[in-house]
Image 1 (cartoon, rainbow, N blue to C red):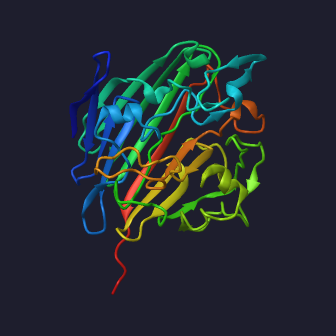
Image 2: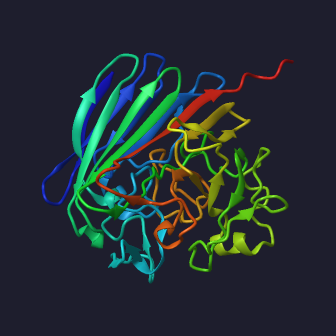
Length: 359
């Protein structure tokens, strides 16, 4: 079932729509046309209690004014581009800067700050789905080429949120996207998520500079605080005396996913468990990278849907994407998009519960 309602009004008078998708088992997701944003994702815990497991606001103005980009769709280039410059087919391009001398998440007016068109509503009982579309003109934030971008949110029983991305262009450009949801499996507004047990299926990660730009090195996680190949609490090493942890003020690094090839179907990238409530999350994706962000930018200035302020590490991001600054690093997987090869990508956030231990 899909329920449509008005969420708020923009200064220009445009109405921002909210679309809530629900399955018969109570699993639901709410999507905003502003930023193609995942506002809530409700699922049961071990005792059958329902909570949203992503951070979100109840007011449009908070989404427009607060930092953090909670639940939004990133573009035209998710994550960072060094100095906002890249060379494509022998020509240099300069895009708009919004993080010091660098560009992040597409620039000051990235796709997370746009009103998207609701392109389709598919109200099927076992797979409700909404498709949102954004047309980005040639030169948008300095990026070359006209881009047509759609993102689809679909629910599948018993607890899958499937996010599908498609993009096409009329001339070569660079493109990278992700969803910027902050998860807390204990429930939105429940406090710190540092006790969640996290595993990431990656043997390598990308070290960064003081300005959080990848150095170009692909470093083994073995023997470092970045090793999540076996589950461990997210916060176990977050206060470690480690240069990379200090630079990120926690984790804000891209993991190189362990893949056997360029399979077109989603593969398991990470899994998370919150032992107190029993919820678990599996992340599957077709993307080559996974950005772990431990909620370092949450400042407590804004209150979420629960009425509680979001503070550092009250949620964490598992952002499936291409690598940061890939347009400037030849040995990273290419983020070049060409007219003859449209972009297609799928990420699945699979929620469930761990049964209680036998007494």
